[in-house]
Image (cartoon, rainbow over all chains, first blue to last red; front, side):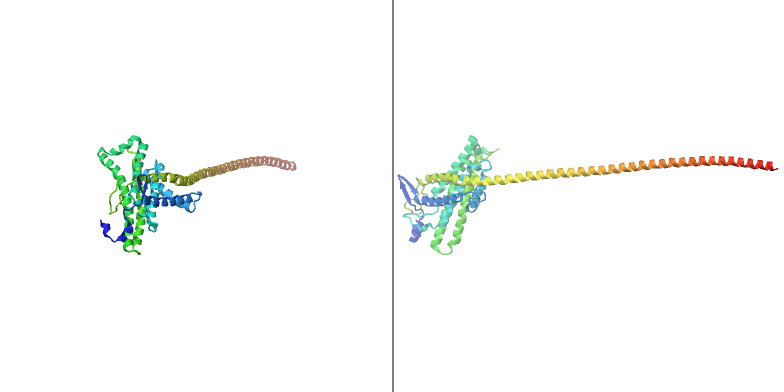
Length: 241
Length: 153
């Protein structure tokens, strides 16, 4: 195909190659798990250091964590509403933190220095499996939020404000996870590819602004993912009158 | 399992969906629980405790302020009423002293008039009695003169 006609060292990009782990007869993308474990380990260490000695007058790391907590609470509260945001704040916050550290970890840490037998390490969110997993969790959550808060009245949402909306609302249940997963996957993969191609073509200076743009996109994508997830949950628990 | 032959990769490809998906979902759910107990709950407890502390203090300060304002208004009204009371007492005392002065003046005037009248009456009496006596003596004297003249002759 197209990529095969390019010089052989372009294979440094290794698009669509995976480090396969075979467990029984299931196959896993090992590089996704490796990077996510490293990043999540770093996140957990960071958080346990920051929450080790909580004080009433916050200092250092605790300050940063409280700022983060406040930011996530504001996000959840504005989208989900005062009544139930507390139940969903950990989920929204986890989505935000996971996507954020995956995106930034993928962009900031020089993974290329670690050679794998096949595939390469990179942002876990640049793998379609991760983003679909996150998007399906969001779908399950908003169904669960709607059903647990309003019971069967949740389905009034589908005929609100008129029954004409029914097919569109059903269609939305499919387009929501699709757009969530592909937006994140596409953005992060595209960022990695653009940086990879630029580094390959012009190894000096020129990729740096694109790398900064990539960091910006990564942060924005994490915010978008968390905000949309919260918005969908908020939409499901909202009372129609 | 879906596996597209994408970008010429012999195995996998960009849209290679396999067991990574459910395992990643489980990992994220587990992460949610871990972060909830390590991060969201403890930090939330501290932040909300502080927020409660601050809002309680603000409410308390507001209550105290309104109490102070009430007390101030109370004192002010008390001061006002005390002032008007004092004014009333002063004016009453002034009226009283004025009345007393007038009464005393009238009394003194009356007394003076009465004693003046009495003195005048006494003077009149004495004058008339003196005049009577004078007339009588004059009569006696004239009688004496007449008698003597008659005797000499």
